[in-house]
Amino acid sequence: WENNWENLTVFLGFPLEIRKIVYTTNLIENLNGQIRKYTLNKMSFPTDAAITKSVFLAIQHATRQWTRPLKNWGMLYGQFCLIFEERILKN
Image 1 (cartoon, rainbow, N blue to C red):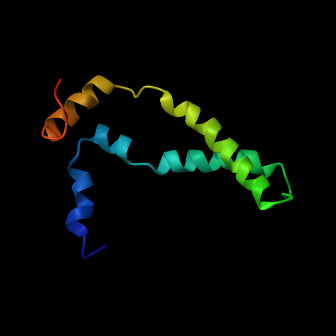
Image 2 (tube, rainbow, N blue to C red; image 1 turned 90 degrees about the vertical axis):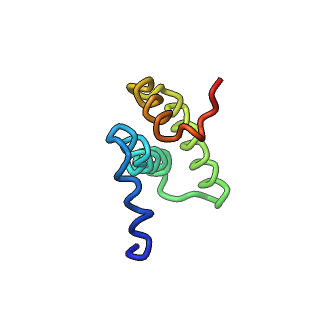
């Protein structure tokens, strides 16, 4: 990490609102919790396919919640347009 410090700290230059979206620890912890909820009740699974199916169902359930709109999307979109103007296609 010391050799890539400049690349790692680029993230800190973004506005706080954008950093909250990009920072994914809470999302990953939430997904892990959803998977745990599906697998915790069973003490063992008869096959590897059974656990795979259970995890698949947990992920399917969790992804339904990912379609919710972000808070303050208009402001965030404006910030993205300013920062990444050359990457955003203008209609």
